[in-house]
Amino acid sequence: MTNPPWAIVVTDHNGVARLSGKAKGNPPPPTPTPPYVPPTAREIAGGAPLNIANGGDAYLPWAHGGGDAIFNYADPTEPKAVVSGIYSITANVAVNNLTAGGFYVVKLRARTSIGGIYYYAEAVGFKPVSPSAPGDEVAVGASLTTYLAAGDGVSVEVHSFDGAASRDFSIQIAFIQRIT
Image (cartoon, rainbow, N blue to C red; front, side):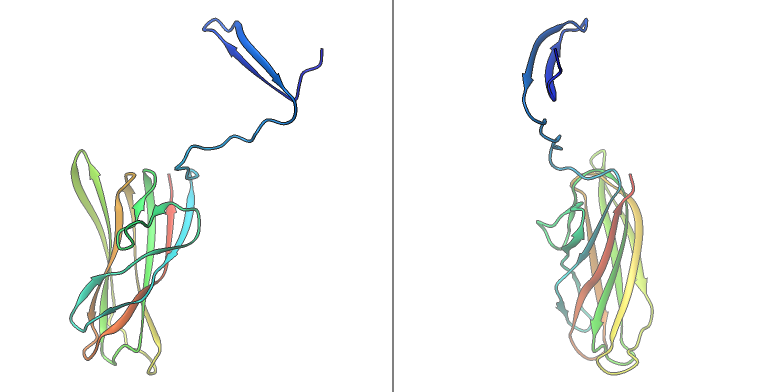
């Protein structure tokens, strides 16, 4: 007897076949149960511009830009990790037409809950920046590596010290990698 391309065999606790069946053709490929994120996964994100007044602050929206979908963006200002793991996150925030002498502060935060207690990891990006010419884009970044449980979120907060006017800030690019 020849073996079919694939077979189903159910055995008891002693390894004795109790139910078997044959099928023609190739077996379907295994389907991971959602949410599936590879052990090491990478995602790129960005975000729409948000106008922030001089002296004001706000949380910037995120949006999936490519790669593995390792964050859920149902809340665009605090995307959530799909699965638990250690994450490395870098976010670059850009602004155009910053007033000469103006600057801004970027805070990248991760919120995780361990045993019902919330912990925050925070990285602050700051440098006095000035455009070299009117209309030039200026970018400031922040990076952190932290544990996130499934459902824990990250955010980017910007504090604007333009010195004169409201400006449009956006997450120019964010690199997210799940390490474990």
